Image (cartoon, rainbow, N blue to C red; front, side):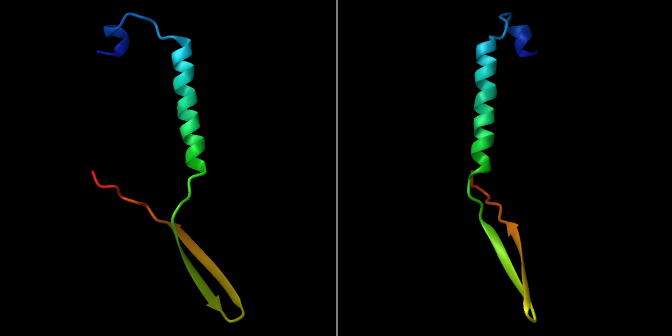
Length: 61
């Protein structure tokens, strides 16, 4: 059963808006979190270049 079927009250627009704003705030905050990267420098004569990859952290339960 869905939540609407078990709870006959309509959703409050204020609650829906607050939940949307919380999700938006979390996503914007995630954009500015620092990332740990691994950088590899390649030198070929006088030129040099680099590559990087983002290191994913695995959290223990």
